[in-house]
Amino acid sequence: MASGTVAQPRSLSNDDPYKHQPGFGNHFSSEALEGALPVGQNTPQVCPYGLYAEQLSGTAFTVGRSGNQRSWFYRIRPSVMHLPFEPYRTDQHGIVGAFDAKTTEATPTQMRWLPFTIPAEPGIDFVDGMHTIGGAGDTALKNGIAVHVYMATQSMNRRAFGNSDGDFLIVPQQGRLDIATEFGPMMVAPNEIAVIQRGMRFSVSLPDGPSRGYILEVYDGHFELPDLGPIGANGLANPRDFKTPVAKYENVEEEWSIINKYQGELFIASQGHSPFDVVAWHGNYAPYKYNLADFSVINSVSFDHVDPSIFTVLTCKSAHPGTAVADFVIFPPRFEVQMHTFRPPYFHRNCMSEFMGLIHGEYEAKKGGFLPGGASLHSMMAPHGPDAKTVENATTRDLNPGRVADRTMAFMFESMFQLRLTKWAIEHRQRDRDYYKVWQNIPVTFDPSQRKVSVKKSTD
Image 1 (spheres, rainbow, N blue to C red):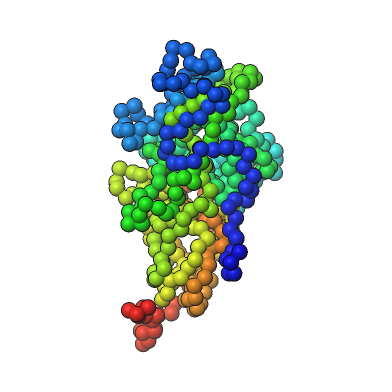
Image 2: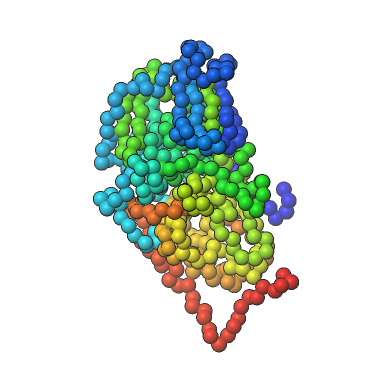
């Protein structure tokens, strides 16, 4: 290894037992039994091996070809073979889907939470351990977003989850997630993300024991790669680094529970077989995962701190060009070489909402208080920026080329929506009610009698 470089963790575990198909937005084909995919048509009178054809549509039938998303399953039993849905844990589960005055509060105050505590009691799976931090919009109108966290102590035992309301972008922070999907399995470790779109059924096992992480849910549209503009054809998250599962099926007749999130409420239905009985599939509407260490970082090599949009991994676009329903942004390990520059993230008031989390390490602008497994929210137009200690260091340090964020991965969910916070989040014992104090000791250095400034020379 070259002198002066630091090895970066690709994930907290590189033990991935599963095969994948590389690419983003491709039309994939996968079969667990040779010849299970019909040739030349989607719905033959009788499918190979006696399977049933079933389409999963991620967009309306008449959406243009460039944006149309759907996949065909060839499964042992149609997914309709279940008993009627009944309400599940009404007023007891932690998911909120209606962001009104009854369930949420509005506040422009800067918010921070210490690491969310994983419960000591066993028996809490991914679904029961999910809690909504906040959100905006209306699931019935397919407009808005929600931010959740999960703290789970048990694998989902013969239980599967499906979301009628939107797409999940899942960010594990502690413990791998072994996710069974109708398309095949994915092993997702910290420093990786998984995207599971609307309507896809999945079940989460915990191979490392108790687990914690974050979820961004979008109600409208799907995540896509950001446009690169003048960057060119390559850079940021490259399509070839995304991984989609390959078909794997189980033909098991046993009691399963299907939990469905619909208009912010949970419903449960029973069926007498595994939902993961898809023998083959093809299409471009499929779950995927991505290793954040594969991100190709773009940064300033001259002066000034560039806008964080340069670190966008995925975006869900709105009807307003350049404005996102939600962006997923990361702050990865990188070099910093800017001269005559205040290098940390600048002080800011934003027309977007910024929810941040930390997977591991120390975030450069708030070392010590912003911890892995915790979070912060800077709402629309709420002032924010580096804390007093960071300011002092940034204004007195030597500006030599160096590294920033080594062995660290912070991220941001940024959205055009103003988020209302759930009472669970507002009243949580891990809420840092002294967060505002990190800015109170920023020194006032103004002196009208002296014009002492670091000047960028034209020859630099």
